[in-house]
Image (cartoon, rainbow, N blue to C red):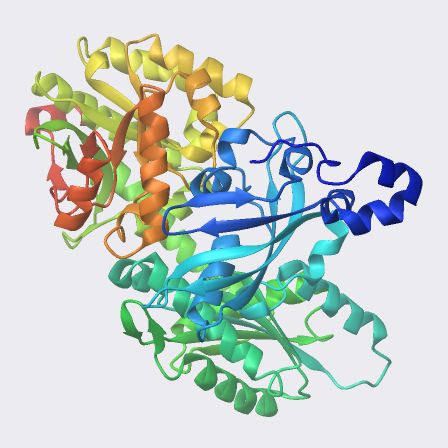
Length: 572
C-alpha cells in the first residue's frame, strides 16, 4: 500500500491559490478520499491485492497485514454481509466474453473495537481460459447502511431486505377491490446433494443460473429477489389459484431447465415452490414470506413440488414430523441406540493416526444407521442436543479408558456449553475416568468464538485446566480473528471442508486455505484439513505445511459400541 499523504503529486501552492475544486481536478486521489472511496487491482492468480494511492488514509481503520492479499481481505468481511463479494466476482467471470464483465457487491468490513462499516464494491473481472476469475479491478467506497436495500445479489437480483421493502410498498398502495397477488418462495430442492456431489463452487454456479433465469423472466413475475443460499422470492400478479398454478408451472420449468452449466459439468436442477396470497394470507411482508415458507416446506411432499399456503395445515404437518423425530431421539437415548462413529485424523506427512473424531449416529428400530442430518436440527430446537452431546462424551470417554493409546475429539454445541451446570457435569464425567482427559479434545464450532469474548475465554480456560485440548471446527466460514484464537488458548484449527474439497479445481480455495495454514503456523496452532477427498488435495495440503488430514480419502467413520457389560452397568 502506498503510504503517501493525500496531497502528494499536487503542488501545495496551486492548492492554496487555486481553491479546493482545482486541487481535486489536479489530483483525483483527493476526490476519492473525500468520497470515502479507493481503487484496487486484484491479481487473483497470485492473490496480490494492490490499492490506490489514497489507501493509507481511506483504509486506516483496517490492519495493513490484511490488505495485501485477497485471502487476508476476506477475513475482514463479516458473516452478515448483504451480498457475497466472491460470488459476484465468480458470476462476472462466468459471463466474461473476452473484455471483462462487471460485478457489484455490498458487504461489511469488521473494524477492531468498533461497528462494522458497509462498502459498495463495483468493478470488472476478467476470466482465464476456462472461465475462472483471473483479475479484478474496481472501486470500493464506504456507504451508509440505508443505501444497501437496493443492492443486487445473485444475477443482479435484489436481496431479502429490498424485496421486503417492495412488498410493503405494494401492500401500502393497494386499494379496496384491487386484485390479489402471490408471493412465491422458489428454492433449489437438491442443493445439499449438489454440494456433496459436485462441490460448493458448482453449487454456487447452479444458484447463479437459477437467479439469472428468474431475472430474465421478469415478464412472468413482477419482481424477483435472492433470499439466501438456493432460495429466491418473487411477486406474481394473479387473482386465483388456477391462474397461479399455471404460472408457477411455467416459472418452475424455466428456472430448472436446461441443466445448469458449471465447472463440474452440466448439473440437473429440481426446484420447489411455495406460494401465499396477499392480502388473504397476510397484510405485511414478514407474514406473507412466513406463509410462503410454510407452503415451500409443505411442497416437499407434493408430486408437483408446489403448494399454496393452507392456514394451520403446514404448521400442524411440520409439528407432526418434528414430534416424530423427537420421539425417535428420546427412544434412541433411552434404548442406548445413540452411537458414535470414529473417523481418523492422520499426519499429512507420515500418515500416522493422531486422533479420531467422534461423530454422532442413531440406530433406528429397523437397524439402519442415520447421521446427524436426520435429527440434529430438531434436537437443537427442542432442547435435546445437550443429552446427545453428553452421550457422545460418555461413549468417547469409555473408549479412551478401554484403549489407553487412543486420542479422540468430541463436538459440543453452543447450547450445551451454555447450559447451567455443564462444566460441573463435564468435571464429574472426567473424574470417574482417570487418565482420559489428556487424550480428549473438545471441538467447538467457529461461531462459538464469536460469542462475548470474555465469557467464552473463561469457559475454555476452565476446560483446559483439566488437561483437555480445544479445537475450533469449520474454521474459515465465520471470519474469526486469529487474535481471538490466541486469546482463547485454542490448540487446533480445523479448516472448513467446504474450502478443502475443491482444492484441485478452485484457485480461490487454494489461496484461502494456504493463507489460513500460513497464519495458523505463525501462531503455533496445529492445523487439520477436513473433507480431503483426492490425492491432489493431499499433495497440496502437505506442501503448504498443514499438519493433519481428515476425510474420505483418509478413512471413513466406523461405529464403535461399548462392551455389553458396560452397557448393562450404564442401563442399571
